[in-house]
Length: 168
Image 1 (tube, rainbow, N blue to C red):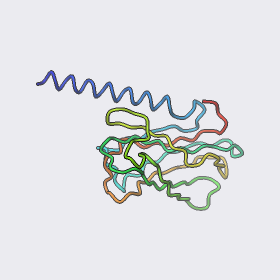
Image 2 (cartoon, rainbow, N blue to C red; image 1 turned 90 degrees about the horizontal axis):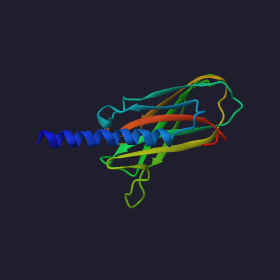
Image 3 (cartoon, one colour; image 1 turned 60 degrees about the vertical axis):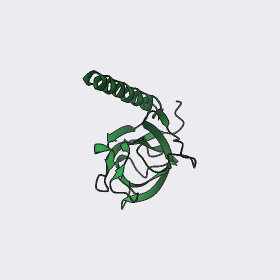
């Protein structure tokens, strides 16, 4: 019994390590200004848990791709994920908020992300041609905007800011 449990745990650790490697390889380019994940405690995302991602922008004349990274488990019950993306930074009089819908499954219930077993990874662009109003540090806060609180099945949430026209 104990040996069987150890073998099962060992397989789970190997699977998680492979998923992390796949996610990193499929993520933003090496020239990304930001490519960061934050774990969601107990894979249950509360309304009050709003991860923040800070990015330093040095070139306001360059267009950027803004991407949301998410890892979900097979316990996630929906085909989409609604988020509120809050942005604050230099050259902005007030914080901007944009509601974003991320499609994670097709209408037949098949996961659209990369993965196997019970963990699926997504990197979904929500703005492919974003111009920052000024140089400086910007903060992006990601808030879950679903009916469930807590929202079960979310393993990690992340944000990527990548200069446009960067070869992969």
